[in-house]
Length: 131
Image (cartoon, rainbow, N blue to C red; front, side):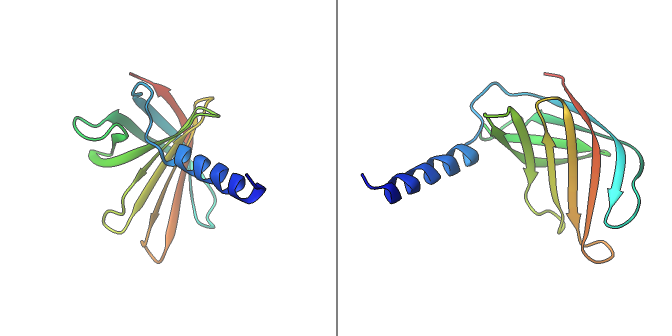
């Protein structure tokens, strides 16, 4: 086999591993965010909390993200090399939600929304496993 087909095969395998649903045991999180940063403004304190739970029905990667009394369906993506997990929503009300939990428990939550023009809101904090 020549080098080019091997490279293409390797790239395809990496892509499939990244996009494949998590097959490990479902994990639930309680996340607390203490810093809020938006666009070019200075960061400020935050008291935002988010829970991530396994969706009651659906595919293995289906989860539910709940914050401020609102629940959104999200998809879990796992990086098995680093044991990091990301949860991403579909576009809902013209907003995208992305929450990442790193191996050490640190977390970042970001929403992209067209409030007052295009805006990215970022929250920094930690998550603990609850289930």
